[in-house]
Structures are given as structure tokens and as C-alpha cells.
Amino acid sequence: MIPFLDMKSVYAELKPELDAAYLRVMESGWFVLGREVAAFEEEYAAFCGTAHCVGLGNGLEALELVLRAWDLGAGDEVIVPSNTYIATWLAVTAVGATVVPIEPTPAGPNIDPERIAAAITSRTRAIMPVHLYGEPADMDAIMALADRHGLKVVEDVAQAQGARVRGRRAGALGHAGAHSFFPTKNFGAFGDGGAVTTDDPKLAERLRVLRNYGSRVKYVNLERGFNSRLDEMQAAFLRAKLPRLDAWNERRRVLAARYDDKLAGIADLGLPRAPQWAEPIWHLYVVRTERRADLITALDKAGIGSLIHYPIPPHLQEAYADLGWPAGTFPIAEKLAQTVLSLPIGAHMSSEAVDAVAAVVRATLQR
Ligand SMILES: *Cc1c(COP(=O)(O)O)cnc(C)c1O
Image (cartoon, rainbow, N blue to C red; front, side, top):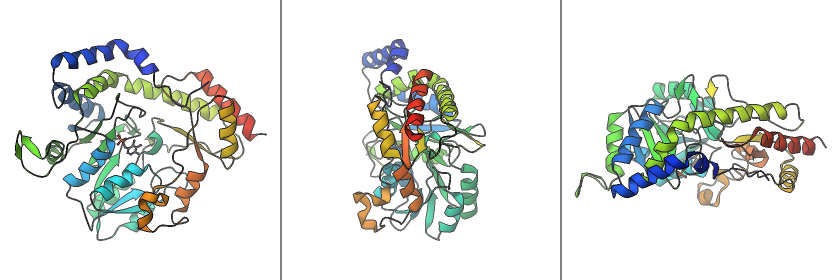
């Protein structure tokens, strides 16, 4: 049996540190916005290479609050990938702005800068690239466009904590980076959590107000804010995990390279290909095949977990039926939704497990 993702081994590896974090918070008697969050914000900003980090309730709210802090709303257009998890779009529509979906590059999975250039209008205010599956989007090209047109860029870093472009971390490449610490992410908490990283002190300060009822000083409310705070327990757990993140990501890189090797040369199997300039962190190892249903069945039978990220693109979801984009509107995203399959990967997976998965894939598709 090979699970899609092993969620228990982190505790086995870090039990003393995590238990100590739990005790520290319990004994402090302070659970929201305290020393753990402040310390985590400092440590995670240093990790990402930004001046500021603001701990928030989750990744979706991190994206949304950045847009609110920039005062984006009705009438404003935000460029988003057509090929992404729905949270990216939800952040934009939550503030009343308009999503402008852009197709991925032909090789996928990330937004195509050339198509972005063609979609910029006088109403465009921001670009929200996603580093999907842990692979950085083409941030050099995106930032060049943003500079030329005076646009804001918020990176969706939910799947890419620790990834780099030429040595610089995801979350430090745009004007703001929105992070999720949902438990299944590469850098996950043991519950919900999120953050924004940025070099912009004004943005960081506005987010600190917005996350806490619009208040800087208790019971003095400067604006209509929200409740979206990383809590002390999750911050303490994340502090225990952060020193391991690079090593865990490195392990994923080794496993991804092993998949590349073991799966080479199979007809009708597309392997992930990151650009030269990108250092992906392999949140997911996503292959493409027209024979996906057969492959899922064979993996199931062998006791191997697999998942589809994602089976329905946002524009075809019932949630966005009102936008009126029928099937065929974003064909590249739709094709990916029909053919992608994520194979098991994780920092605690064995090389033998990768070999076993690869053997089933090869036996199935070469039949
Ligand atoms: C997980 C995820 C989010 C949302 O993060 P939450 O913490 O679950 O709200 C946003 N964007 C992408 C690409 C994600 O994978």
C-alpha cells in the first residue's frame, strides 16, 4: 500500500519539537496574536527573503486581503490562471473584482506571459500568478509586464513554499506573496493557516489592521476589518517545521528526478518539465495521459493512491456558471483537467515506493 500522501511521518520525525511547541503555547495561556506568531513572522520573512510577513487565517484569505489592502473591487480586472485551484478565483470575486482568466503555456501548468500581455486593458489592476504544483510561474516576464503597465502582482504561493527562481524565493518575486499552511501543502500546519510576505511596509501594516477587525489599538476600529489570524499553536508548530523545509523539499526533488528517470520513454505519458530558470519544490508530481482512467484503475488495484489536480477548471464549476463561459472557452485548461494525474510524492516517501509506482504506470501504459 502506497498512500497518495503520508500525513503521519512528520510527527514521527519531529515529535519532541512539536510536543515542546504545544507545551510552550499551552503553558503561556496566550492563543491568538502573541509571541509565537510574531516570532514566526520574523523567521518566515527571513526564509522567504522579504522584509515583512503577516500571519493570517488561511491561504484564501491571504490572497483576498492583499486585494482588499490594495483597494481593489468592482470594475477592477485581475488576471488569473485558467488552470488553477478555485481559491485563486474566489479571492478575486470575493472583493467584487472581475477575473480575467489566462491560459497556461503550451507545456503547462502555469500562466502564459504572452497571453497576459494581450489581455491587459485600461481596467486591469493586478496579476495573480500561481506557482502550480510547486513550479514557479515565469515571474521575470510577469514583473516586466507589471512594471510596464503599472500593475500589482500577488503570487499565489500556496503550493510552492521554498521554491526559487534563480535563487530568489517564491513569495519574494512579486509585490506580495500569499501562502497557505493547509496541512497537505509542502509547509503545512496542523490545521488552517496562511500568511502574506512582502517588502512593502504599508501593505504589511494594512494587513495587520485588516486581519484584526480593522483595529491597531484594541477597541479602536480604523476600518471595517476581518478576523483572519494565524493562531499561536499553528505558528509554534510551523516554527518547529521551518528548519526542515529545505531538506524536505530537496527530498521531493530527488524523488521527482527518480520518477523522471523511471518513467522516461513511455508513449502517451507526459512528464512534468520545469524551465531551466525554475527551482520547483514538487508539491505534486503531475503526469499527463489520455489513458488516465485505465491508469487510475491499475494504481488502485495495486494499492497506490493517486489524485486529479484538478478535474474541473474554475470556469466550468457551477460556482462560476453566471460568468457564462461554456466548455471550449479555455481549451488548454480543459485538456489538462481531462488528462492530468498526480502520483504519490512526499518528503517521507521511499525510493522503493517511487519505483513501485513507476513500475505500475509502465506496465499499464505499455500494455
Ligand atoms: C491550497 C490553495 C489555496 C488556498 O489555501 P487555503 O489555506 O486552503 O485557504 C489557494 N491557492 C492554491 C493554488 C492552493 O493550492
